[in-house]
Amino acid sequence: MHADRLDDLDTAILRVLAHDARATFAQVGAQVALSAPAVKRRVDRLRERGVIRGFTVRLDPAALGWHTEAFVELFCHGSTSPATMRTAVEDYPEVVAASTVTGDVDLVLQVRARDMRHLERVVEQLAAEPFVSRTRSTVVLSALVRRPDVPPAAG
Image 1 (cartoon, helix red, strand yellow):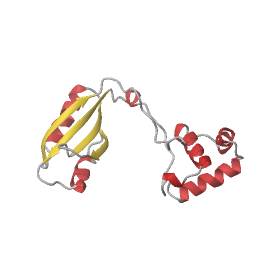
Image 2 (cartoon, helix red, strand yellow; image 1 turned 180 degrees about the horizontal axis):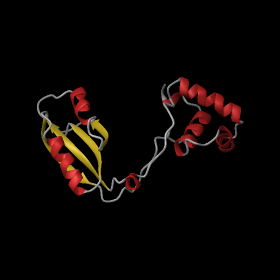
Image 3 (cartoon, one colour; image 1 turned 30 degrees about the horizontal axis):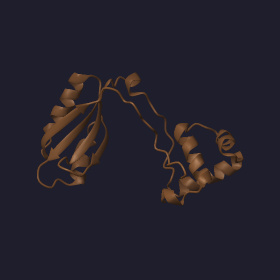
């Protein structure tokens, strides 16, 4: 399902749920001018179409003991496949996101760690992966904007 096929009400429902997945159908309905049963029908359809894959909670990493964050770039030997990269980085609980990218970098990781020593160990382990030729890290000082995945505003 493509987001461009969503109508304005579906988009509004998704925006409410992205900010509070625990909102009741009545609460969502009050914000989008629909009855609770109408919201439920639309949410059910959005789930069936795969637009909504699940409901979750947003956590505060620092409250969980993850006080250090970095973006780690991996430069790989030859033509390492994305499947090989994924298999390797999935084993690191500190890796919270991984993306192949264009340019001279092959893979960018978002990494969370308890402290700088922990981050250093993780980066050393990543650098020791057989397909990695080198790494480059950027430590996050302040996370200024973090948004949940929400559909773009109508426009």
